[in-house]
Length: 325
Image 1: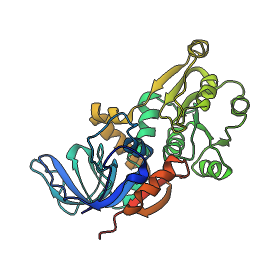
Image 2: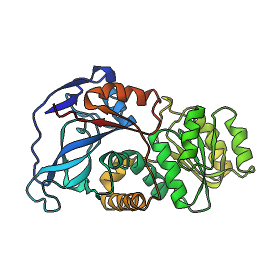
Image 3: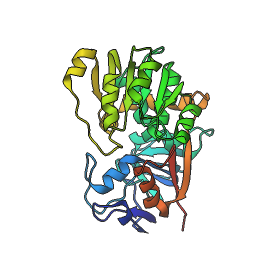
Image 4: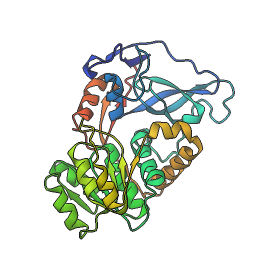
């Protein structure tokens, strides 16, 4: 089969599209013929050796794939060949076939496309866990979403609205801010003069929850914009700058800074994770949430697709499609 292979840590442009042996499902595993593969910002960090985990090289990146079951390993009774599924893996999804533990494989309703299924995994899964478990966002609260036009940001906007929050999104261009509004944000602001704009938007009260996958200077603005008992979610550092926090702001605001490490959550709390997916799938089926697919590319274009995400050029989810050659 064809797959994208990282032979050594470095630039994403060094990734290779090449032939590799077909995977064989082991005990408790499901082998999937991929129809759609999700591309995520952490995939780029993994390839560069900048992510929290570092698999031995060579390896295939990618965390999510959707398609049909080809075969199952011993002990798997939940799925059979031909079933429509989506899977989460630590890495290995940028390939025509993907083997995944059965605990990370989810049945798809006929109404859900493979593209949407991939979108709901990492990006939406991260945002959902951040807002449900880590922030415990409540209806009527005000949610600030930095990096609002990225796949995780757009997910946070939609999930925030599904929960019943007022959502203020922040994005760098007019096109991205329009995308935030189309996803349900009540307001969409530029990064320029953000502190004053947030004060005006909240009447000086501040925000109850801040969702920050960006880091950099915007983090300090968010820290200063917290309401009393507010929760500042540390999700990632797409700006490339890991910020430092003046602890006196936490004291004065009586706020909390809360880390969001979705991959660790998936491993440590699989039952809660499965429950989160059920809620996302139910919302999708009822039209409460709607994904936004930015573009679809052939699997062989993975490096270019990934670089565009690292450069913060994507607005929504990027999908890779195996060519079957």
